[in-house]
Image (cartoon, rainbow, N blue to C red):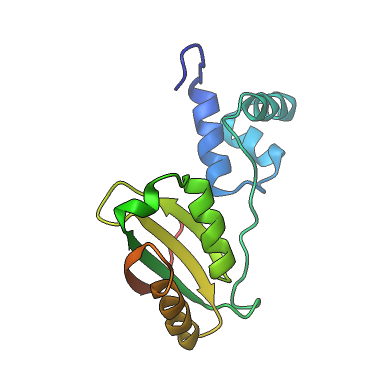
Length: 152
């Protein structure tokens, strides 16, 4: 946490509650934390202004959207691909190549890039993998289909 930024116990509990359900009514949060709705509203605004809360996301029903298959793709790149390319540029390039891209992470581990995609069917996975293998700078591509996702 940056120097001078202070979170008390209530802020931490509030962030935990919102991270699991950002749509929870303020009155319910106030009851859980034993305080007023006005205080919770002020705390949320403060956390947003201080950039502890960066935004809110909708959880989509991908089955209804016709994209029931979820796949993680692990990409290793040639070293020269990194020269002069920012992670933002790499992510933008991947968005153009891969329809259904939901997340892209630049990593320091075994893989250089890990992406998550949503697909209509398994056949789409083969097309995406084949397309990635033709991209200059990509050395290796591995994938795994996610069978079940759990939210913590």
